[in-house]
Image (tube, one colour):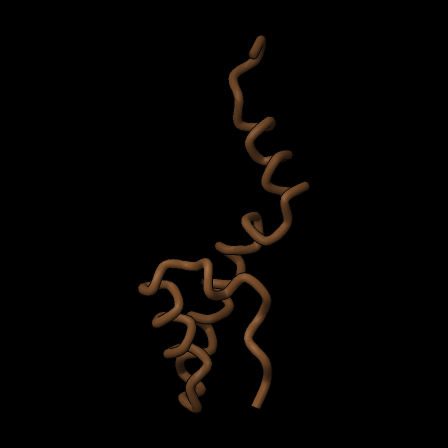
Amino acid sequence: MPLAPQGLDLLPAEVRDLLAACVSLDPAARPLLAQVRAALEPLRSPATAVDDVVASRPPGR
């Protein structure tokens, strides 16, 4: 059985439940898992998350 990624316990229960459903044996759930992973990627990488915040600021701030 694969180990859970580090920090998984810090996610809200709803997100953990969704991830658990996505990694079930149901192949139809795998596209949803890919969407969840893509959505969480900026949170996983602090450098990317900071770049996204800076890029979203209006000019002059």
